[in-house]
Image (cartoon, helix red, strand yellow):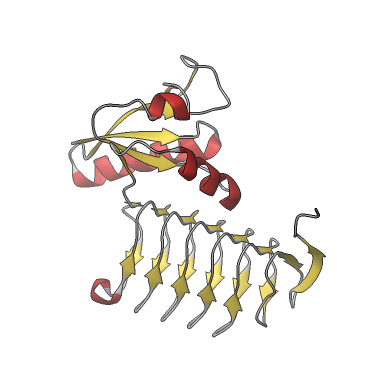
Length: 220
């Protein structure tokens, strides 16, 4: 049994708590012991139906014993910002995989740390994944897909064979990318959009076929 906390006590955090329960149930033992939540936006001692808020990043950075932490955010930018705020060497970031996830060929699958697979995702063969990616249920990742870090894939996303994804991208509900296309960095794909060409960085794409709706670069 390993102690684990969730950073972010909103809806995503509560769903992750459910996933931890599902992992324990499938293993018929307590693999993870949820000690509570950390959240910079809520007072210490507040709670939800899954547990108490133990503090924010400052309190987490003061933990003196090893503690697993899951980042519970659907925003790539927030995920990255919170990760940078956690500097405690006692904190580590496991990969959390729901028991219903289908991994077709484990020998050719690689991933880093802090990735989260919610229920009913499918991972094909020769898939490579970086760090801190959210696969938020029913996400399909086909052969030879490469994914960077700090990406968020909402329910129903489809990545066809040979797709390459950079860092910091957001994929809306039921969006899709056709085979061998490249999604760069800090791009948003709107709900239901189908990407049929390589995308530009820092851009919002919507529609079928997906087209640029606006530039997401921060104006100085």
